[in-house]
Image 1 (spheres, rainbow, N blue to C red):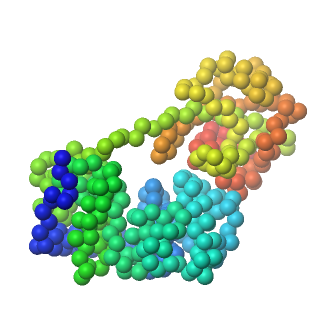
Image 2 (image 1 turned 90 degrees about the vertical axis):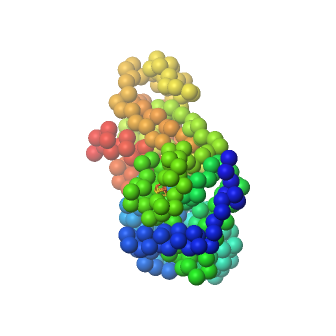
Image 3 (image 1 turned 60 degrees about the horizontal axis):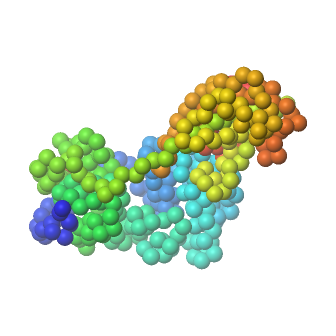
Amino acid sequence: MKIPEEIPLEKKQAKQIRIAIIEGYTAHARSFPWKETQDPYKIWLSEIILQQTRTEQGLPYYLKITQKYPDIPSLAKAKEEPFLKDWEGLGYYSRARNMLAAARYMMEHHQGTFPNTYEEILALKGVGPYTAAAIASFAFGLRYPVVDGNVLRLFSRLFGITAPVDVASTVRAIRYIACTLMDDKTDPAIFNQAIMDLGASVCTPKQPKCTICPVRKYCRAYRDQLIDLLPVKSKTLKKKSLYYNYFYIPGHSGTFALTQRDSTAFWKKMYQFPLLEDNGKYSTISYLQKRISKEWNYLPNHLQPIAEEKQTLSHRHIHARLFVLDNFPPQNWQDNWLHTSVDDLTRLPLPKLMKTLIGRHLQIP
Ligand code: SF4
């Protein structure tokens, strides 16, 4: 097992690799609004939005949010529910909540301005070492290399690192290599943009584009045909499967039932149809009928799912069936069910899975 400290990185070769990375980037750099600004607030917004989100998908959200909340004070004043609605479709809603908390923290502790040291940026809620390094280098020109999953994969292949990249010692060592490559004459912002871009768009997890890679001639994985084997991970995350039965239940005057999720699990406080969750796999229809009868005091004669959808989150696969309970007795309406109109859907934050069920499978007028 080769660990990064064993990799000889001579000054001359470090310089060659650095030049190749930066030239490769500047020749094909794509322009995005967050690359054209040094405003730390906007850079922070873009970095948080782009965590777990593709650039093309994140761009309209970046434009909408910077227009609606142009600075720290306006974001700090935002209420959680409308902000989650603005965030709807991006997923990973804890990012949005952390941003609100961080904006309020900056109002309280930094007079509404963005902190300008790596340590203070790192102290903001929702900001880890990668995001702190990105903001510190892009907004303030500080020499902190960005090391995320893409960069770990790139460096693991480039330097033939066979130690697992998901253990702290390897991450530390790769950060050290990145520091060595980013010498004090290099613009940290350009260097970081370049390694992020190379890792994300050229040295991709599957079928990396080696033929156009600017560092191919230095790449040990390419030379030793190890590309498919690197990076090594010590453990592969096993995702848990959840089985949800959602119920579309019409109420009075064209309304239908929605409930608010609690604040303990994922999709905190977002809205969804009334739900009965199955354990391990979908239950049979007759069992589900009995559960409806027990929980909501109503026995539907006929029950068939009108749709099935699946959504994958970072730690879970959510399997969802959608049922319609047309003749639900009004007197059995549950206390925690909201009578929701179609107009309410424009203001209540919904998980993507709910939007899919509503948009694809229900003719809500
Ligand atoms: Fe990645 Fe291929 Fe470039 Fe090596 S040559 S760094 S494997 S894209």
